[in-house]
Image (cartoon, rainbow, N blue to C red; front, side, top):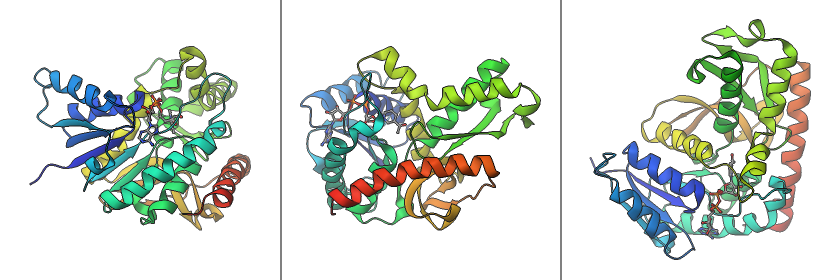
Length: 313
Ligand code: A3D
């Protein structure tokens, strides 16, 4: 069986992290593409130098030419600008939308059968743009945010409880912005509802910190945004697709009537396998959760409307 091919468009902080992880997991040959001359080549060669130690038998190459992604099975897009202190994700809208449009046109030409994972912010509007530009079926174009936001929520709960992060399952839905919705009621540790393990005000504080976690990292790093955990999360999605794992993951998926929403991308739990997004799972939301979800969706709607008004595919 031929090796799979993974194209990483954007060889910055997240792109480099994903190249290393994909090589460690031997998910397939990795091609990294960036406009910065030497950067994708340098990072690919650097990881190749460690292949004997990892060990990894996949090939890693870097290029400044989009043609290098030819016939890729998976394309993960991080091309664009990250946040700096004082910026919101939405401040990146105009510049990153132009980049995604350009990258999307090239994916359409070079890798028409690819599963496309968008990471560039503002996430929900960028994945919407990508699907519009490529014209790919919506199940093959998804956004990475929910896996990261849910992992942040789970990890912070685990820290508070002093238990293994892998035993905590917690979900964050809605748009990938300050209005994201961490669902406390559904969080469990080893199957035990966390509402039985921690006081509600502690859980509310953890939920609030989760929603601001991206900004917390930006404030600490000062020169960019989080990259290790976003890289890990996007590779988890690629793995679910390539191995047909039928994983239940929260990601930005195009909604077609689910949650009463039509034609928007937003964070919801899905089943992910060889057909990409195989099913959107509809979670029961109580009145308060639904109200918070609606606020988050309004923010997504606003950004998506900007894309509709300013960019025709
Ligand atoms: P960074 O390290 O700056 O890497 C971005 C790379 O994109 C740079 O190397 C650029 O040269 C490159 N680039 C710019 N334009 C193009 C183009 N047209 N074609 C190819 N490459 C190009 O940023 P990063 O890796 O830290 O972050 C990348 C994106 O992910 C940013 O938009 C972040 O805001 C976003 N991000 C999203 C999340 C989510 O959870 C959704 C989390 C963290 C960061």
